[in-house]
Amino acid sequence: MRGQDSRPGQGAAAVPRADDPADQVGAERDWRVLPDARAVAGAAVECLLAAARDAIAARGCFRVVLAGGRTPEATYRLLAEREADWERWEIYLGDERCLPPEHAERNSGMIGRALLSRVPLDQARVHLIPAELGPEEGAQRYAPRVAAAVPFDLVLLGLGEDGHTASLFPGHPLDPEAWVVAVRGAPKPPPERVSLGWRSLRDARRLLVLATGADKREALRNWRAGRRLPIAQVCRGRRVTVLLDAAAASGPEP
Image (tube, rainbow, N blue to C red; front, side, top):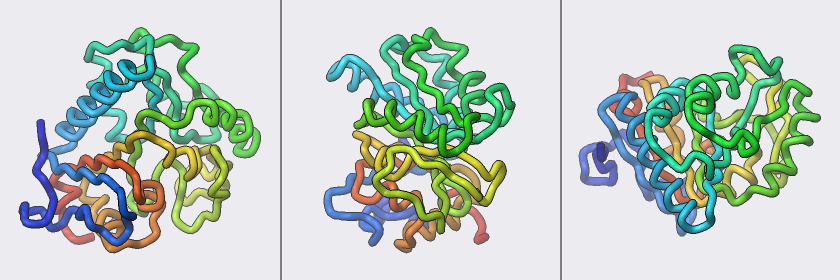
């Protein structure tokens, strides 16, 4: 389902505009407002499948970075019901929590249950982050895989209430040249994580951002105001599609 065009004059002033001061010249911003979270998940599936078809036709494989979170999980469950050239998909994760491999709150566990275990993927093409080794060693081990894969065909990103994305949090100084970063002291549990860095997230042919729920409205408003949020820094000047539900676009003031 195609969402409402949120550019000026289209009746969606609460949604960030394509001419935000946080953008640089050359950015392509596509903001879509959908009725609810399920519609966002459905639109995200169509974006993923279209990007996969284009990438496979052009390069023989589809390299995609997947995100954790509630809205991406709904996307993966719908995606698993669709047909695709799964053996040509190559899966990477945007971030991972430093927990044991079988821990229920690992992003890899959620993605495995919702998608990876339900489609005929070549497991050699599924690149999980070894975050159980700790932030520094996990980042060091994952970095060569990322460096060999970029530019990604599509990076799927969520949005936190504070404007974080992946495990890049406001106020956390990180090496801008690192493909993968070790994260300590994250403001939400668990505090230790491994995340793709600015460099690898931005080195993508397309970014797809999902935001649902009224609790995301303040982060969206701050992004529109040009504040230096992690999501804004990743997306600045890049080719971005942002899928919002009505609650995120016009929910009550926080």
